[in-house]
Length: 204
Image (cartoon, rainbow, N blue to C red; front, top):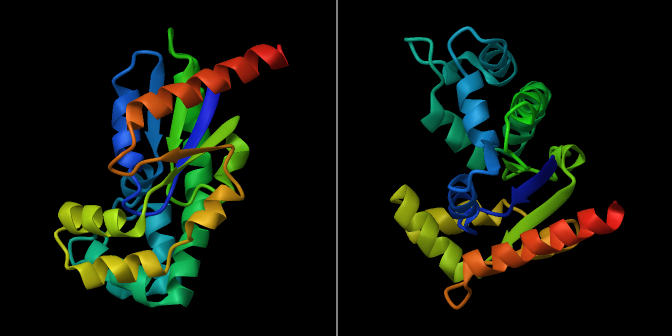
């Protein structure tokens, strides 16, 4: 079983890559963001710790997470963003490991993809055999965020401003996958998978 981590800043195309790979029978994708959302159920240990360390105002009257308020904290308050990341890392680490174990028992699956925006920041790369970072130009990322989240350009720019730049990923990832308008994403992805397979053969 080969575990591949996919990361990159917002608007770089992680979801698109995961969708491409998820259509293939020998791939399974674990979406770290979805795992976090699933863990944030009312009265869950994860949600309770968020309320305890960030504030009860992040819990709605029905017991669910106030995602809009939490997003506001993430994008505008560095200290609360750091606290949330630490809480998430602690809880999601076991969740990812459990999902990997489940998939390892599935017949015909050769690759597990961990789609995680904070792959390196949370040290999830240590769960992976290889890592791929999506790279795209700033203007294109802004346009994608605006279209995806239905926000103004200034909002998209502000979100990108608190995220790591391309050189952060270039220094850490095993492979870079460029996703600009002129790039053939699926073809480039296939080339990287082929290189990974060759490395695995060489390693024996």
